Figure 1 (cartoon, helix red, strand yellow):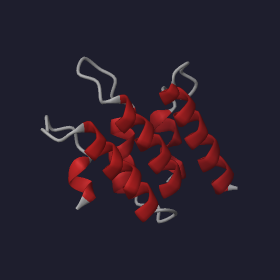
Figure 2: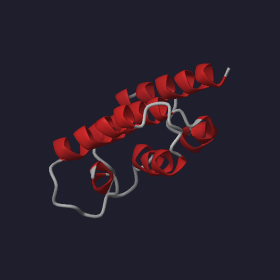
Figure 3: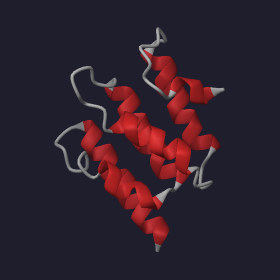
Figure 4: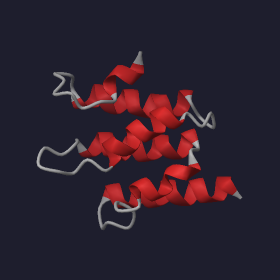
Length: 103
């Protein structure tokens, strides 16, 4: 059910609802390596175009990606890692956590 909140389809859902769903998905799928979900969350994390994703959704996406444990997606969000923002810090933390889990 929570996965319907992941895509940014001009939904009329509150940002806090989407953020909570994304965060919960990370807990539900922890260490399950759900590649399809993790790839969708990478899209949320890296969405900073003309109509950017809400920062809280991006932040929660980074945390959930690291919990899901799909190591092969690190390169897909490397552009965000190291940005001097909360999102960059969360992405860097996620990448480091995934690298440690891969060892």
